[in-house]
Length: 212
Image (cartoon, rainbow, N blue to C red; front, side, top):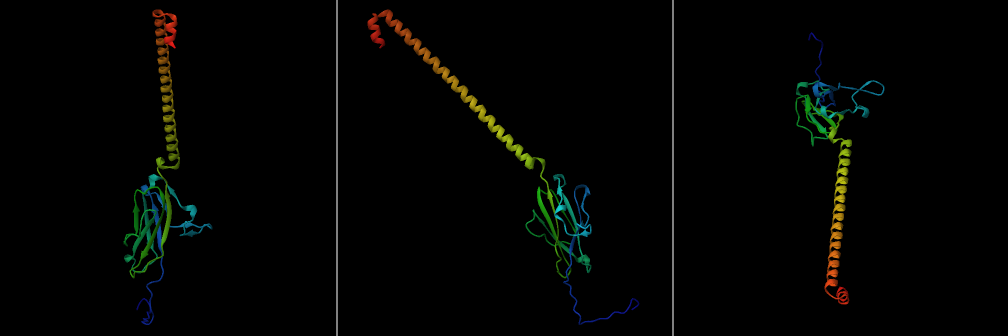
């Protein structure tokens, strides 16, 4: 041909199962804020697809909507490539295969997540899995400090309630003691009147015998 010489060798077996990779090309959050541009920097400063532990971001809760774009390093019938994802921390299993090279995750709760993505070519060969880890911080009212504050408030309420009821019981005790004292005094006064009345009516000796 005009493009060169081609040799057809029917006895040479072609493998369509050779290894290839899925790669995460980019990650964005709310308002298309870029979180990841397709590679990391190794300790030597060279580009790397391996995520270091020190580069696992913690997103504020307001940025809990995350979009992933991915691809595969397989270029034969690339339009037939399909993808499956598994968001560790939310999903129970891998998603159905889809030709869409992106996935959006909305309203993620606080917690630790790792997205796993794999590709499958037209010959049903699956790629190695690409992964990306991140965390979503809780809203302020669900933070550890907030729960400590709630606990302190609960302790404070219990303390005030105990103090209120203790004071109330003390006041009731004082009131009851006052009632008892008043009643005792009234009984004593009534007895004294009764004794005086007996002395006025009966002879002293007889009155004393009755009092005893």
